[in-house]
Image (cartoon, rainbow, N blue to C red; front, side, top):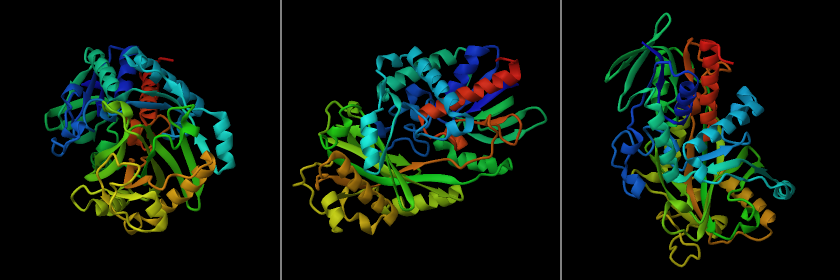
Amino acid sequence: MEDIIIIGAGVSSIFFANKLVQENNNLSIRIIDKGKPLRERNCGLDKGLSCTCGEDCSKYIGYAGLGKSEGKFNYTNDFGGDLGSRIGGEKTLKLMKEVDRTLQRYGADSIERYSTKNKLLAAKAEKNGLEVLSAEVRHLGTKVAVDVFQELYETLKKHIHFTFETNIISIHPKAHSFFIETDKGNFCSKQVIIGTGKSGGKWLKKQMHELGLKTGETRLDMGLRIEMREDQLDSILKETFETKLRCRGEGYEATTYCMNPRGRVIRKFQNGLVMPDGQNKNEEKTESGNLNFTLFVPRYFSSYDKAMQTAQRIIGGINQDNGRIIIQRLGDFYANRPSSELSPNLIRPSLEAEPGNLVDEIPDLYLRAVLEFMGKLENLIEKPIHPDTLVYGIDAKFYEPQINTTQDFETEIKGLFLIGDCSGVTHSLSQAAASGLYVADRILQKNDGHS
């Protein structure tokens, strides 16, 4: 009988487990994950090739989860989830400081932390109908993120049982414990923590249904990815590495995401779909001469299935079962004419995509958001956006459905908790990690009388 079984070995689970081990190393803890240990997570996608993993892609699944990717920790309540609304803004920021101290202790201090706050820019943006969102940021990059999480693993494995490449078939609540059936044997535990992140959405939905726990609305963000001249936004980026802007219009709220000066646009593979994503300049030996970001527009659906059906219809329709991504010059986009040959274009696309007309394939909401945002952005930087700027369709961020939990993230089944993105409350590495620390604190207080 374990004291605690953690399902999923992503960022929230790692910080949850590390906190428990620090405070009470007498607890018997097991982490079960369907993926592989970090050093064994290899995929062709990491080298710009096709996925070589089969059903469970090691780029996204396994120890450290999406923390392996770019390792970008944004410490803020302005975006990245609603943890501040759940447990309080000051408490959330305090937990994020603890997250950052932990990262530094395991090697992240080699990367300088920076702030995106700029009061003068915020005031100017407000006059032009935009809002500047700010954060303290520690952007590890893939290599440092892997090293940091591997060091955490080396520490944790001295105190915790890890069970990798294991599928959990069912969770059965008993009087004061849980019976967990897997394809590698069965386990019992006094408490169960689920931290399966975005990648475990389908599995979690099935388990919640079998446990009689109802799911609520589901968020889905979609938006066009923009690639422009590297110096186009110098006037607003000169003070910070990344500036995040929010634009509000009739029926929508749009936010820039993953701004990559001198980075590249790459393919992202999730939920059987192919989308344009951004890559940090440090991920390649040479930098590009471009800057890219996505303008995401969130929508809320009554169920997870409806959100995924919408994504499949729009993105799947573009993909045409062969990974197709559409690209269009901004000048052509404004004129509602399809783009054709891009070789003479001043701004060279960093991702190979099929020229076309976004209007024919993407709902008006996302097109209108870009049109209105670009107008406000031009006013902010006081010069026109170059017509050879490129627009890719269409990027997406997926979220888990909201599941009813207490403020401590405990479900209606006593002893069963949800942490990180699978709770439907957090949407970023920093907030996921903070939620793990928060629940660990609450369980320690309840179980051991810690203050």
